[in-house]
Image (cartoon, rainbow, N blue to C red; front, side, top):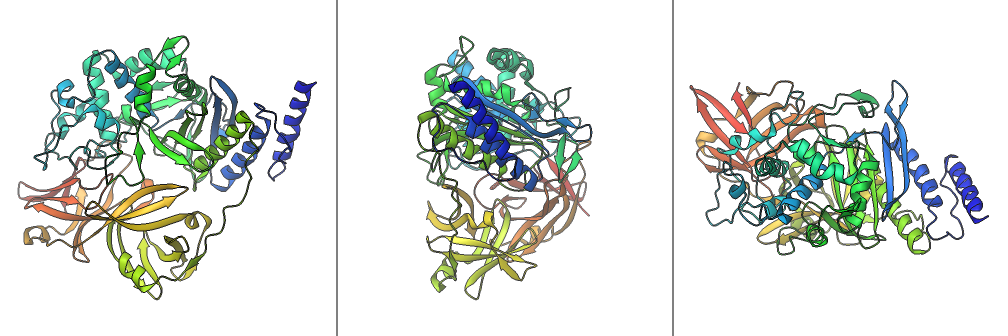
Length: 591
């Protein structure tokens, strides 16, 4: 009878969820009965997919060694009306890094490498220039925790239908510079993980993809998963954006982002993590190895304000959830997020074939975890309370004085100027205000048509603060209990006459064939006392991205700011009497 009532309850909950409003919360939930979770998430996912223009999505919720719910929504192929299912294969993007890092740690367990030895020990042809004479070595450990100081990407040739072998990147780095000394700051690097893939090939004598399949994917039982530059096959999803089908081109940096998988495959990886490294009767990783990967590696890095990272894993603590280990992913159009709660032995993976216009994947994951914790532990279900409205007010003169100025950020150059009792700026063609909040942080307000101040819900949830850390005035973003370094306040640097003569528009002369991520409108400008590198990438909706740069020699400058992509080198070259700019593998000729 209990089984029948549980089944009947599940049907009623699912029916109510389809009615356009959230399902009725039961007065009590039987411990281990995930019926309400399925009903509520079904309603939430369908609502958010409609609002955020997502064509297809699949989700799996894992309780220890059991998948307690798995479901597909929308379409894997809209034109042919092929539904997204649990078996639908997506591009997982940077979730791939967890697998590459796991392969590295397996070799460490076997005594074939020491993750604290220089990368050059295992990859002898690796070399990169450095401006930091006292810096320590680049090691597999600081690469896996994104503290190697390597550039974030080598953009040219990264996204193309016919990518060159990723192993060729090693030889192309010899004339490039490290952005930071190792362990200076967290700076995410696809390039670093790709070098680890090259290291794995050299140490094992095998190509990366078949080795990963034999050593990790097959032992986990990931029957539809594979590393590949592109995506193809009967079960694979197409890609979409703004309700239009798009071409998901191949990726050169396969170890960093080339895993294709479905949510059932990734559930098996989650189950291995929750079982202390064991899967299908085999120890994939030793418990102590897994614990080291989940241990915070950067607690002594002052500039990593609010950011905690393990080996491959991003670590955080979320209200109502607790300690979380996760990794997300993004290709040109696919999006993903894999999350585990080691303490509760729970996990969630969400894969989508379209970039949401908002926070769909985070919202669904957080709700799934909150409900799963309550159901597994027998606690009351969490309330579906609306996020309290955050009151905003005008800024004081002191607040304006503290925050006004010029910033180099991950979003480009930002200049904050006092205007009445606010600070105003323009970002990617949109006018924004900074206003006061009762919690002491700055709030962000959008100006419709550049005139009418409004505060969309997502902006209202974001707070900004300015903090002096280790000699830098950092702009910090606070969102859902997490803190991120957005950028830093900067001061103009004198521009040598030789560099000022290089101002003008440029065109790329060595673009990889069929390159999908093509920088356009490239230029060197002078603005607000800074030398600026400007470009647009329409494929990512980046218009007129402006990066302030500072000269470090007669023929080189670095991108100002802190974090991913910052402090990377822009070289000025003259070849056969023509002026060029070299950056991220691109060679740009002055028009």
